[in-house]
Image 1: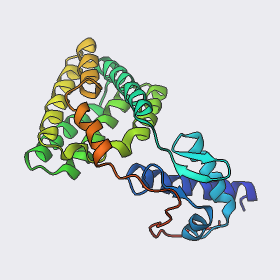
Image 2: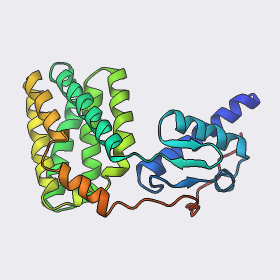
Image 3: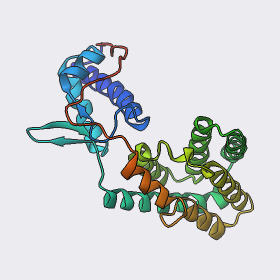
Image 4: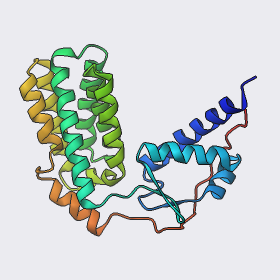
Length: 242
């Protein structure tokens, strides 16, 4: 029988996993108030594992704990977002560079399949399918770098900015541009050209790229931000007490 501490850690870990998904998918937007009591009711647990889960999310930078106010989904200023996107660009450029000499099957296969899926989704203007294929492409690059620490940092940085990118592929022509860039990056990796793979990935994610002005404009005009103390949580299966 697991110890009380082990049981608490297990429940908190499951809650963290669900809340990470909710934040990444935009179900909980930046600035959304996370009420401990409401979350405890949602998951069918006491407030103790909820507090533990929120502490872990805070350590990962996904939520902010504000003294005497509560816990909120992390919300970045434009300058903070710019800095995070610069970091994503550098990390992913390094991943692509390493992939050019280190990438083995099955990740090379996964990368090529994602390139094909991105092209097909762009042709049919299916932005939801493109979003998934895009995630698969970048994940293959992370894994193909064969540097676990670099991959973890790249994933963490991308997760911090994911909610701000949710509607990026709905802009006219954006999927087609992105799909073409994926194909170029994949070709450089497959030919073992490290400098070109890194350069193309930096350009692909680069803040100076043609898509960034539109990206910032969407944040200012269209990006929905939850108001503090909003507590309309979706239903979820309770987390087992054992």
